[in-house]
Image (cartoon, rainbow, N blue to C red; front, side, top):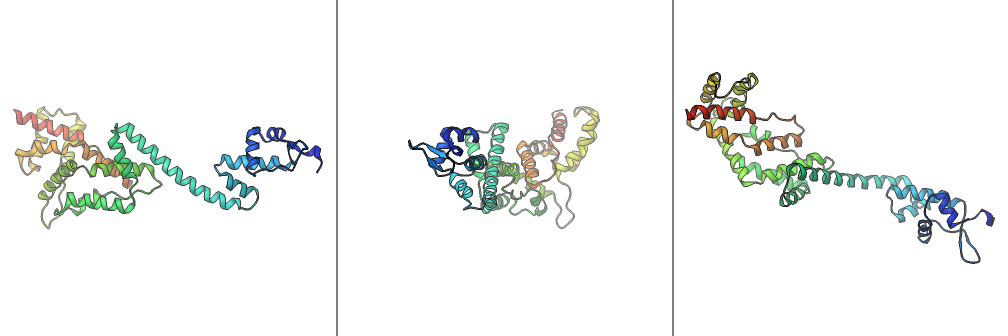
Length: 296
């Protein structure tokens, strides 16, 4: 080879767009090798070294390791197969990053404590079998002995796919809520009341919460003040709907539980259901209308 066609390490660095230090490092690792040396021992590279370093630079920017790059550059490893394996690895990394992003967003939005953050992180990493056991345990705790199979189905989360960080984040928050003993006890009490109001062997009737929503919605739309006489017919209808009039106000207050509302919101995200209507305004209005008349 014509010595004039050989490149010094400085010229090779200039043509390849890399630093002399980087070229020397690649040369020491055998990724690009000198074609000759001067009598003084300086390295000289052939023109093909520029193209080789261009390939190395591209593959390096795509995240391939140096040993893999050497195998591809030496044609010992087929690039399409290497690329396919790398795509799979990157997809796994992207799923992890999306999950981290979703969990950190939850920490910021929900203002979670360090303990709550750690719990959500652990719950998001559960296996499918562990998630199934958690769901089964929760459903058993709140539905055992109650003939409410239809209601149970509406409160059961699906298992999120690993590729969906938002659903996984919602599932982790749902799981933390579902393991809260106080929340379980409150939901169990509500479900016992629902079961007690259902006719045996007959057509299931609407729940009291649904009745409140249906009865109060027109008053909310019309802007009726809960303390005004115009609210009297709605209060009368609520009283007739409730089995025990003396327990109407406490039950309305129990139903208006932000944790239960959050449970339903999370369930909609997990199961891909439409966002639920917030029952809070209707329950607030009903509770105030009953309170005013009870106090009077």
